[in-house]
Amino acid sequence: MTRLLELQEQLQETRAALAQVERALAERPDKPSLSALAKSLTAQQRNLEADFAVEVDRLGMDVCSYRVFKDEGVPPLLPLAQGLVDFQSLVTVVYDARKTSVPKERAKVSPDIRAETAFELGYTFPGSLGIVLTIPNKRRLILDSHLDEAIGQVFSLAKARSTSDIREFAKRLGLASIRAMYKWASGHARAGLGVGIEWRRESTVLASLLAQQPELENLYRMIEETSDESETKISVEGGLEAVNIKTRRFVLRDSTDSRISGSYKDAIGVSHRAELPGRRYRATLTKVERIRYSTDEEEVEYHLERLEELA
Image 1 (cartoon, one colour):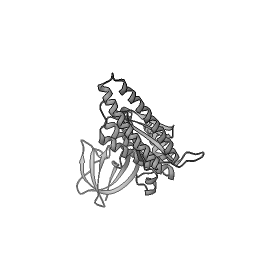
Image 2 (image 1 turned 180 degrees about the vertical axis):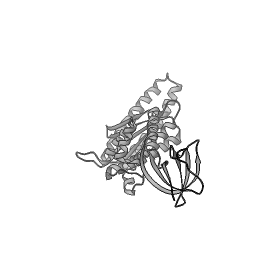
Image 3 (image 1 turned 90 degrees about the horizontal axis):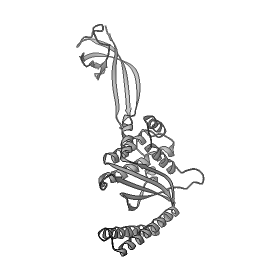
Image 4 (image 1 turned 60 degrees about the vertical axis):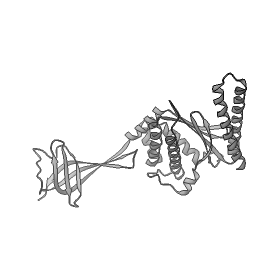
């Protein structure tokens, strides 16, 4: 690991020196010595990056190159930092689903899973702002590792083009992965950031993702629009507390003293009169449960289908 630390230090020193020379060259573009020095430092940086990749591979680790960019100006620090945190969470949750072959509905993972997917900082690089991360990845002779599979799923999910695609990923990975993707994509998009990610093993790019800000915005809005619904017919006894004939809304208190509110169409009207308060009814309701993919919240709606007066 000593060699890796040496390379990290040399890379940062070289990058700092190159930045200083580039600033000087911007002020004195006619000075040949500055131009030659910039070329020399650029070549040195590339050689160090290649050596870093070789050393990381020797240690059984892969490299994740994570670059954010903005149409105008420099990417702000807070969205960048939060985006890295969200990306870490996204990879961890998807990895958990792939390794256990169990779709995850909640983002709670074991300490072992968290440790197996923990990124470490390698070094930074320009253009707009890039960070090289490293992560241990067990090599397999034929099959991809669980981490390789997880990264492939993350990149494929980020390229989803329809709500049906989102539903397919939800079946395969669980809602926790979809919500993690929503948080990551919406954070970047709302900050006006695009992202370019490469997953590399030494000099070989195993997988890549390039997503502009509009693409990330489309992704998170598509997840917002995706939900699962289920309908259940239920029957309850109770008394009506309120009816609004204009909005066709009702409020009913059942035998357990719980309030149920919702909508109705023909269950109450001229031919189906209802009295309140005092009268007790058996209400036939359609309970609609909706789970939105973008949040942990479950929405419940009630539609009153029929009222029967109790003796």
